[in-house]
Amino acid sequence: MLTKFNDWVTKALMVAAAILAFMLCFLVVADVSGRVLFNSPVKGTPEIISLSIVIICFLQCGFAIRSGGMLNVDTLVLRFSPRVQSWLAVWGAVAGLLFFGVICYGTLGGAAHAWVSGEYEGEGALRVPVWPAKFVIVLGCSLACLSYLILILQNFQHALRGELPVKSASQH
View 1 (spheres, rainbow, N blue to C red):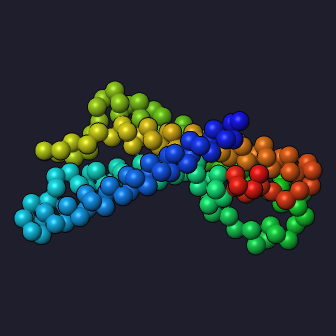
View 2 (cartoon, rainbow, N blue to C red):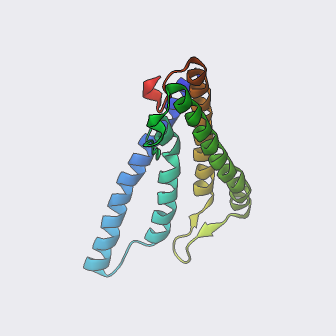
């Protein structure tokens, strides 16, 4: 049940990230066209794009983990037995959980501060709030932690049974 919910949420956030990336294409075209044709770029484009790239990346974290798209070098690991491969997958997932957990913990205070203080990026005509990007980092890292926790549990079971590790949600 938790796995299905996590998969649904991570897929939905992946779609949201794709839509945001698609919309950014139009913003860039409008900015370049305005700059070249009318000598008047779209105000705030650099700020919007820089924050949107962060949002897009962290919206995709959970899906990348669940789909098996995270970096995985298994040249040496493939030489071990299925049981050892599963144990190594457990430890790799623990490392991923700790990594994203530290990022989540480290960003939480900054996200709260950005919300309370009304932190923004940009000057003049368009000021872009920073808090959405910071809270998306927290959300993305939280989902990454949940995805790694699910992989830890799945691979732990596989290690006990001596089976090959689970690398993505589609395998299980």
